[in-house]
Amino acid sequence: MKLGPSLHRIGSDLVAVYLVETPDGITVIDAGLAGQWSELTAELAAMGRSLSDIRGVVLTHGDSDHIGFAERLRHDHGVPVHVHAADAARARGEVSTKPGWGSMKLGATVRFLWYALTHKGLRTTPLTEVVPVNDGDVLALPGAPRVIGLPGHSPGSIAIHVPAADAVFVGDALTTRHVLTGALGPQPAPFTDDPAEALASLRRLDGLRATWVLPGHGRPWNRGVDEAVREVEQAAARAR
Image (cartoon, rainbow, N blue to C red):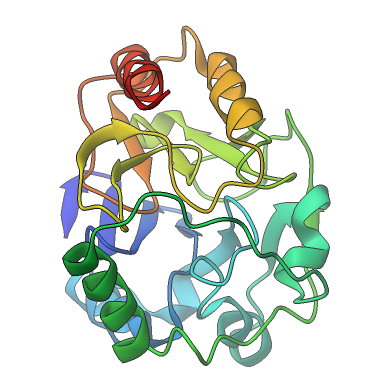
């Protein structure tokens, strides 16, 4: 799905992956589920591109539903995979995480779990090697993605600001579709290690100029960063 001149999405509102395209090649933001590989290759073909055009993957964090086909790209195609240093062990499968599930509705939860199951969510291959990044880094990848540390969902959660795409990719720092309840609109994401820290970290996005706010789960948001953060804070206040 083409969102803008330099911006594409694959997957769905349940699990999304993004592609930033420039004349220099493609940067993949998150790697979703292993079973989304066929969607990746189909989108590349529709763009007139191929796997050889991918210059790097940047992970917003190291959870299993964000690293799905990353190791396949790294191992089979030599694509470097970047992740915050604090989540490197998580992406390599060396850290076991068991966050609470919180509020759930049966239909929404079953739909998410079924989507994950049918897209090989139980067959995720951890990364063998990663390129660690840190807050403030500007990566030598298409679009010159800039790393913004947003700890809370995980210790190494980041946002990735790409001015060339007029977008900031936020992973699970927020969601616009709660995968366990089905609630729509900007709100705190489930499976978060430290919800209070995650909410406070969003203030690091204050004043950021980007039309698109793109979460790992939920509909693309195109009403700007400040409005997205405001709605997340309101949703968090209502939930208290």
